[in-house]
Structures are given as structure tokens and as C-alpha cells.
Image (cartoon, rainbow, N blue to C red; front, side, top):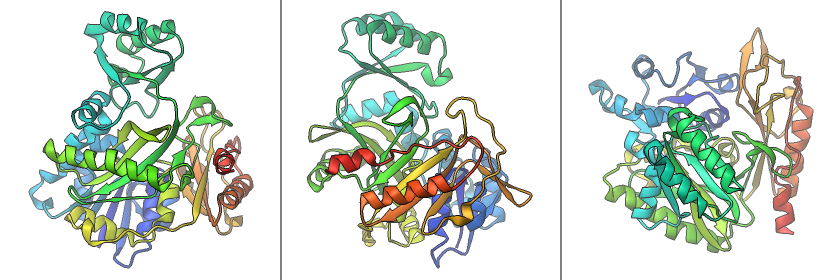
Length: 428
């Protein structure tokens, strides 16, 4: 069958790499893709937010299966748009409709959803510009630190942890009246700060049945030992040593099952990925947030551990037949180290030549911000490459990923040298 992936990052390259291994995949397309996806698929020069262009590509290329990578087109309703095209009624789509995507598109929506369905999460209240004074008064008595979240999509940067009342009040004013995050900050969720350790659990559902995919821990801050500003993600590890079977059983019973049942009760037919951002507080799971797609760079450690034919899994998801396929997971550890452009996550330059990729052995290189130009691979974004290694131990996977990260060269290259090191210490 012909398959189209929407997106242009490391997540989409990992999808393309995995799908291309299947004998069920005839021709694979990625829109718009990058230099890495071009190795496994045909890139189409169209924006994933240009819905008519996506529909035309589906028709022109006789696409039978569409996988939506990023959150933005999901929240904007690409699934609904395509479902409304009479000639595309048979198109298999992996990704929720706009209503389901509100789990990620609106923090207030997801908080109300969790409270309604008894899913453990931090206590919170939501405020708007009209209730700004009430929010400022509320912060006067709130325990510190306190978390403030822009309601809408803010490219992973809409969360502020305030250490003082003054900082919290200033942040709330800036978000609601200064438009720090644009329309995404028209509502702000003020939330209890949870002390614990973060991880992510990934669920694939066909609307009724589900499979729990390998869990992962990612590293958001630019600097070692989690210092400096937040990024889109500097690395990831799977499996997670502190997510033992009893804890993951609690996640399934207290979070996954109530989430899927809640979607059904609310009349939301959800087919696709649910990324559950969790905080392990003592031995209990609390949901920090939902994402309605796979994460990046978590995908780059999760997919290498899935041993199933990935096309089969995607088709079963779209056809409502996930119960017929047992999930098979590799016991190996996967570690990815992300190479980023100099200056990221602030201002950075692109167009730098990437060299020495051919020297890497027994390593998976997933391209994020790259492009092909005149036979050379150039940097074309903040997060450039995800260097993934697999090994029989966490220590060896960390070592292999780090050695490969050192080997690849481009001007201004930055990367964290401690991805997974905290988990080695934790295991000890």
C-alpha cells in the first residue's frame, strides 16, 4: 500500500524508517520531510497545514494510509477535513479528530476531562483576562512553587514554574494581557507543583482496544544536569528504570483505562497515539499533560524497541482491530542524544554542512532539522539530528550514543553529555 506521513522532524524520520521495513509498504511519502526521510521515502514539498494540498496528494499518490505526525494539523482539524471528502471515505488515518486533539490543544479541556473521569492529576484552576484579578488573588494564597500553563499550543514553551508570588503574578499578567504566548495564553491554568520524577507512557488505540508502547524519559533543558532553558528535547531513554512493573500496572489501571473509557463516554472516537506525560510521586502516577501524537525525541527510542511490523500496527489501529495483534517489545535499552544548532533554543543559524555521518556504525541517525542541497546534508533547524543507540545495558547504550554524537560534525554543534546518566545512578 501507499503511505503518507505528515511532518518534517525526527519523529517523522523514525516513522519512515520503521514503516519502510514492512513488506506491506509499497511506496512511502513524507510531507514535507527532511534529508533523512528522503533516504527512506519520497518527500512532497507541501505544508502539513495546507489541507487541500494534503488531500490532493492523497488522491494523486493513491494513498491508502495517512499518519499525522505533529499536533498542529490535528488540533486544526485535518482528520475532520479529510473525512468530509466523499472520495476519501476509505482512507485509513492514524490520528484523532479535532475534538480528540483538544486533549493537547487545550490544557483547560484536558484538566476538565481528567477531573470528570477521575484521572489523577495536580489540583488546578483556570483564569482568563476577565478573571485576572481573581487569579492574582488566588496566587496570593497558593503554595509555592506554582505552575502556570498557557491553555493552547505554545510549541512546548507555554509552561512557567514560578518560585515566588510576585513572579507568579507577573507571569499571569504577562500571559493574559501581554500576550506572551499569543492566542495560546488567552486562558491560563494555574496548577499545583508536583514533586517527583517525570516519564512518558505511550498508548496506541483504535477507539476501543489499545496497546501500551514502551515508556520513555526525555530531557528538556539545554544544559547538563537539567539546567538552562527548556527545549523541544535534548535526548531520551527507553525503558525507564524507575518505571517498574507494579508502577506501570498502576498507570494502566488509574490512567490509561479511565482515559480511554472517558473518551468513549464523551463520544470522542479516538484513533491514534496518546502520549501521557506523567509524574511519579512516591509510587503513584499523576498526569501532567496529554499529547495527541508521539513525542520527539521519544519516538526515536520507542520505535526501535517495537518489534512488530509497524504497517500492520497502523492498519489495525485505523481498522479497529488492535486486539488481534500482540505487541512485541525488545528488552534492549535505547538511548538518543540530540545534536542541536549553536544558540538553540534561542537564535541560531542554519545551512551548516554536516559531516562524518558515514563513519557511524550500528547507530540509527534520525534527521530533524536537515535538508539536502547539492549532494550535501545541511542543518535546517534548531534540533538537527537524533543519534540513537541500542544495547543490552543502559550504560552501553549511553556510551554508544555519546561516542556517535562526538563523531558527527557541523559548525556550532551542541549536545548534552549526560543523557541517561541520572538513570544509571538511579539503577545503582
